[in-house]
Length: 188
Image 1: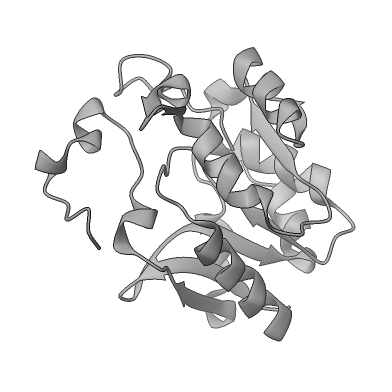
Image 2: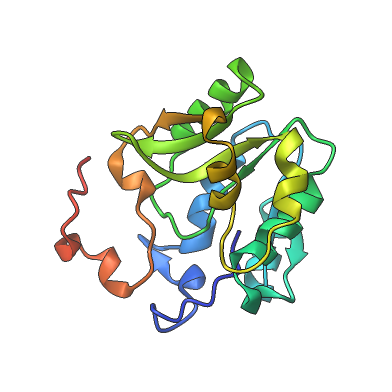
């Protein structure tokens, strides 16, 4: 999902280069090597949508992004109907790795009826891999609460999958979040 407004960042953060690569492309690159049946990027930004298409992702325009994250989740869930599961990732986690996404996929293959969320030391984060039977609930979300609402409805189905490194769960909301001075150990 790549439709946020980036108000706290001060500009379209998805296009901001992190280590020379636009923020959104870093997440797409982490997903590119995984054998997903369908790859979709939901965004309101034409440069992100055209970049997603160039990376092999189906672009889905989000005309209702001002509503909040639920609009993106609904569009993503609709695009994934009929699949056994769907991974929902946000495009502002520059250090997300293919290794951690593969861990989520492996956990899903072992327990396909559970919700698998990337975590670090027991703290749930993104991305989250939802089983196909929950796509209808995701497609019915409204407002500025995303898939977390569905996770809260089904806590007994939640499985935390440890990320390879802590920094993979960092999301970028402000420019300061990109600085080591933000209090994060970039070696973890």
